Each structure stands twice: as structure tokens, then as C-alpha cells.
Length: 326
Length: 290
Picture 1 (cartoon, rainbow over the protein chains, first blue to last red):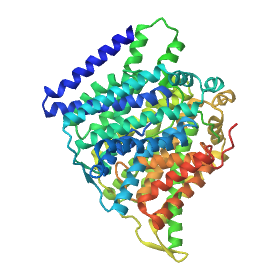
Picture 2: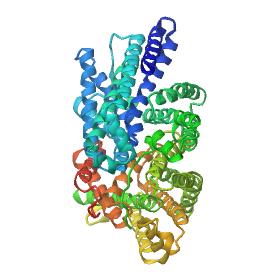
Picture 3: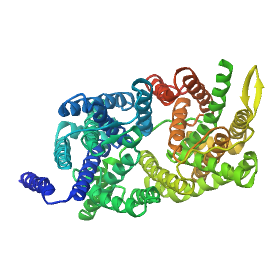
Picture 4: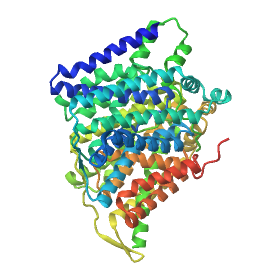
């Protein structure tokens, strides 16, 4: 019953949001596009990192792959096919990253993703300058801002639906066991690596699609624009503020922070990244489990401490227990 | 051509080795992954640039000032940022995630400060920019000096850590942080000291880099990245491993840049990383895990 009510409320909310372009001016729609984009990014990030405890710093690598694929192909292929191709490239890259690192401890994954956006940016730049001879591309697609917004809204709904489904499926159960104790998980027959890789690929494809759908907003695209590390950073802060391990957590963090960032970048363009960094450190210190985690803890103050920590904080799971030698 | 490339590769590799030694100490002893490490390097590079251009003092003398500054800065960062996280998490995996996140925030703070102070342009200065003849190849004197500095500082540190009682205590914390207090070692102090020592090495690395390379306020990420890869290649906490892995990385990068394409250096670095991950994830010199 609770689920049905939840679905009805969510459906009504998304329906109302879909009507918004009819009542807003161009600036308002632009804001909504950015906000929906970040809600989707943060939710997709939380889908993998929030549930496994493997901090991915490569959001913009996949975002950029999507955006650049659209830029590179927009004159040769029909739009739906471009989206499919973009998603396919994101999938292949995610598989490579996942197969190489997710069978090992978490540090390897963090390090690999830390430089991934820069690697792909350099590879694209190298390819464009030496093979095609052009750096920078124009996107001419017959898509208005409202079309981009509706696509993003649909993608956002899909992301939340997948997250909801994952939390209830065998995959989600397996993840919860892995987050609590990897040794136990492997002893009861969970294929840890495959579970993690599958989830990472889903999350990466969703992020790639956000980039692909948002690309026509730019008109002109070059690697330095679409592989901007700030995107990874913002996504991370938003998901953490809201609570990366919960269905609505990332969205809850993304909406207020997006508005705050818009205001900051308009008023303090030079000190933007300093303020972002400080805010991020404060969040890590004060709200390690996010707003949702805090609310849950306030609502159940009598729960035993370690149990509360176990259930509300899979994001704080494990990174790496690398053996250290002198 | 070959000799020139070889020497350039060794110079770059020496710098990587020096920088990676600092990171491997921070990660091995203090157990915190410092994603803002490269920003410390670049901050010191800017410091050397300022000292050279405004005061007209040689960067080598700048080292005397900047290395202690790097030490003090990291000492403070550990006390303010890391220690509360260490206390909260009681060590282990949670600490690693928290330290990654907190230093990721710190990265943006330091980078932002440098962008405000120096802008986003490429920066370099002219110091000992004349050729020296070695084995028939002409090498810039500043590169040679950079290599010698890296060797002296790295070698000195190695001796300090392996030959002194104090270094042995630090390594003991790295090997067994739970058991170190049993033999009277203050693990908390050692961790803070290790973190600060890593910062001092980062500052030295920054000064060395600034003598022969151009840099910008945002080049720190790449240095962190490469240092991390060198640390993994050499095995975490393994100084000799970091030294040889750094040299290998520098050589490979320089050879790819001069014989294949300068645009593919990072790809080559990642290829090595991938090979290490698939073949020997515990590092070239690491023992196989049980």
C-alpha cells in the first residue's frame, strides 16, 4: 500500500514537472534542465558508489563521453541512434574499468577513476588533432530546451526506478551483504566482482546518457568543455549531502546545492572552487551519512549504535585493506 | 636522439620517484590517501617561481624555505583535517573513504587559492638554462640539477628511514599500526609525522619540477595521479619500489612522447597501470597476497 502511494505521489510530481516548460521562460527552463541533470547524475552516482562504498571520481568521464559522442555523430546519424551509440561507448568503457579494478580492493578503483576523465580528454584531443584534424565540433540538432528537459526528466525517472528496483532485487540484497561484510558475502555464494561490475555499468550508462542528452545545449563542444572536473565534484557533493545510499537522498542533496552553486558561480566566480571545496569538507565532517541518514538516526534514537551504522551507512562500507610494507 | 631521450626520461623519472616517495610515506604510515598531494607540489612550484622571480634567489635556496613550509602545512592539515577523521573512524576502511573525500575537497580549495593568486596560465622561469654535454648528448643544466636533487633528497630519505632508530619506528607503524604502540611507539604522532614528511617531499618535488617544466594551477591532479600509479606499481609503503617504478614511468613517458606522440603520454601511463592491475596488483616488488 505504501509503495502504491509512493508511486502515485512520484508520478504526480513528475507529471507536474513535465508541465513546467509551458509556464516558464527560457531562463527557468535552463535552470530546470541543469537541476534535473544533476539530480540524475547524483542518483546514478549513488546507485553504484552509495551502495558499494567504492567512491567513483569519474562521473565527468562518462558524462563527457556522452556529450562528445553526440557532438561527433550529430551530422551523420539519426538522434535516437546517436543516443544508443553513446550509451554503448559508455558501457564498453565502464566494463573495461570495472573488469580491471572492481575485482581488487577499492583504492585501485578510486585511483583509476581519479585520472580517467583526463585520460579520455587527452585521447579525444589526440584523436581529433592527429586523425581528423579538427578540435571542437558544432551540434546542430532540431531540439528545443523543452525537448532536452523532457528527455532528462524521463531519464531521471528511469534512474530512480532502476534504483528502486535494485534495492528490492536479488542484486540489491547481494549488495547489502557485500557492503556489510565481503567475506560473508563470498561465503554464501555471491559473485562479488560480477555484482559490482554490473551495477557500475548501469550507473555509468545512465551518466553517459545525461551527457548525451544535455549536449545540444552547448551548440559548440570541445574536450575541455565536456570533460570539466567540476561536474564530478558537484555530483559527489550532492549525493553525499543528501545521502548516497538512499533512493531519494541524492535528489534531496542535488536540488538545494544546485541552486546554491548557481548563486555562488554568479556572485563569486573567482572564489567558486574554494567555497565548493570548503563546503564539501564541512559535509564530510558533519554529515557523513547525508541528510537522509541524519533524519533516520533522529527518528530512531533508541536503535543500537552499531546496527544503525550498519543499515544507514553502506556508503561508509569498505574501500581498501591494502597490505602495507615498509 | 636516443641518449637525449634516455637522459630526459631519467630526469622525469627521478622527479616522479621523489614525489611518489612522499605519497607512499603518507599512505603507508598515516594510512590516508591524499588526493590533494599534487596541489602541494604545484603550490611549492609557485613558491619557487616567486622566490626566483621576485627575490632573485636560486630555487635551491628556495628549497631550504619551501621544504619546511611543506612539512608545516601538511602537519597542520593532518591535525585539522585528518586526525578528527582518524578518531571518528578508528582506522580501517571508513578512514580511507573519509580521507579520500576530505582531501578531494582540499584539492579544490588549494587549486582555487592558486587560481585566484596566479590565474590559469602556464608558468615557467629561466634558471640554469644552458646546455651541458653528457655522452655526446646535450642536456639542459637545470634538468641535470633536478635529477641530482631528486637523487640526493630521495637517497637521504631512504637512508634516514632504513638506518636510523627513528626511521625504523616510522616503518614499524607502517607495517603493524596496531602492534607499534605495544613497543612504545606513539602511532598517532608517527602518523602525523609521516604525513608531514610526505608534504615536505611534495614541496621538494614541486621545486624540482618548477626548474625544468611549465606548470599551471590545475596541473596538480596529473601529478597526484602519476604519483599514485607509481606508489601502486612499487607497492604501498615500499620506498625502493617507488624509486624504481618512478624511473620506469618517467622513461616510458619520455619515450612515448618522443617516438609516438606527446598527446599519448597519459595513455601510456594508464596502459602500464592496467598491466600492473591485471598482472601484479600488489606492485612489482610486492609479495603475492594470500
